[in-house]
Length: 154
Image 1 (spheres, rainbow, N blue to C red):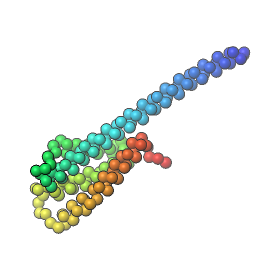
Image 2 (tube, rainbow, N blue to C red):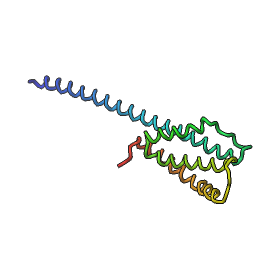
Image 3 (cartoon, rainbow, N blue to C red):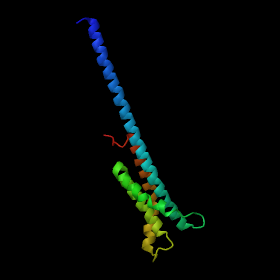
Image 4 (cartoon, helix red, strand yellow):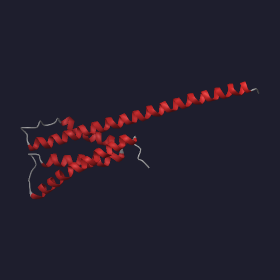
């Protein structure tokens, strides 16, 4: 075979390899972007549900100053947490703890809560004290998940 034939064959093979590589990189980038968007949407939905629970606790503390959130907004937090368990289990553990703390806070500050005593006040105080740390850990886990694309670094 002549050098021109080799160049033509090599050029064709390299062109096909370039097309395949470009297609693979585009597909990978699109998939990664869709995964990132899904995580971002799930986190936003969960945080909106948590904001409703936080608003409910604030409403219980000062009903004249804060509007009570809708029941739909409160109910949206649990399904959003279930989605997090499916798509981001590393985040879901912190998310579960944060939502539980908010629900305890909202329940114990409710004016309809029966039989208030010192033990319940101690639980409320501990919950209120640890809430900022739990929220900070949750937001950091969400940030790390978005940065790494849901894959834990090795």
